[in-house]
Length: 496
Image (cartoon, rainbow, N blue to C red; front, top):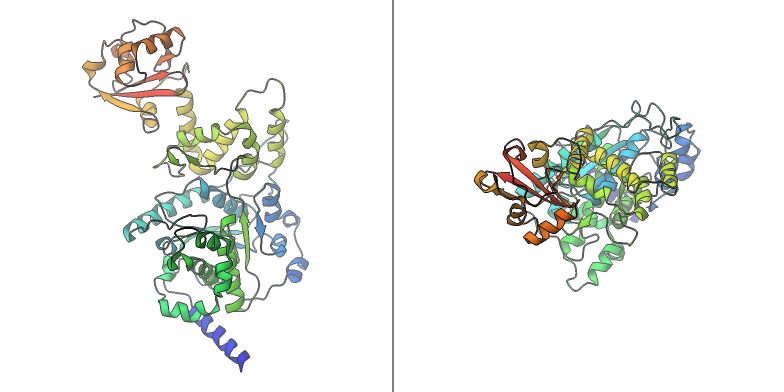
């Protein structure tokens, strides 16, 4: 009787998981077969798969934990891997970058990548890693954020990988486990929104068909839940159910789309295992796997990507490619090689060469940081964004020979202090007075002292005289001036 009741409950739940009309993917070969570790491991593997994607990720420090060793034996094309991104802002930030890098590695190894935008779960808020409940977003904001993030992810994941890089010795090298024709056997990618199936699910249906399989004891035992329950503010029921919502996403895509792997940061382990447990209990099959990667931390244990000015955004609308590039250019030596391994697609051999170069006499400081900044900026912003960042970096270097134009200066105006002055306030004005009135420096004596030290620049040209007046030819394209005090302090002056 009990066995019959269990089978009936499972059958009822499977009918509840029917594909909905609004799916972004067609209903293709759902993964129903029972997979065992032995069956997966004993399957014949190709030479390329012998060093599969999990092996690649582990060697680069991108694996924190996996739910099964069988995942390492997967052959190209066997995996459909998803990573979730909740639309809590108009852009993803640096903390989301590892998820995109990991999805790209799965693609490069021939697997299918799925980016799941949390149009539904974003209305609840993931408590993982949070000390308090997330602010509630209105529906319009969630929808606008979802659309913006879908566009951003499509741009990043849609870029074809660069050809294999060349080592300093001139010999062509291949990234680990990736063959020379990797662009021809790249796995596909798709972007989904979980609101497309959640909008048709009622609370009563969910509690009856899914909630009954969730054990409260197991849910409370999750690390993210225990921390919040022990905090002063505790945890709301809404947040407590989040792991079930994310677990159901995995269950739904596993059954209807064949998605068999979920990846996420180490703080997502509880949510990921909630999904694998639901799949085993409701569908009564094996074959769902989870993989977590370490959080993006600096060597001192603090989060990489948090600054005094806020998050490092991936969208150029919220942070210019120039400023994004500069952030990676400023990475300390102690972190740069580790970030090379986890954030770029350079081969480990080439990264080792770069590490060795840092120890040799005559090494130019920040050479490796420059390469890191180039590779990550190219991945996030493409070649066009990288060129914009490099052009601005060179043009804005005091003493650079690059000819400045108004477009280049305006391109960094959002990233440095700026002001607007009338033409009459600038033309024939003593530069010493202008440096003070614009706020570049606090006093005329400070300006004069800096001129004597050779540290004051007008449009990247060093100023040697305290008597310098601003001439019409100094106003770039008749629109703007760039004042610099040393290498870092700048002021953009717009002429109105």
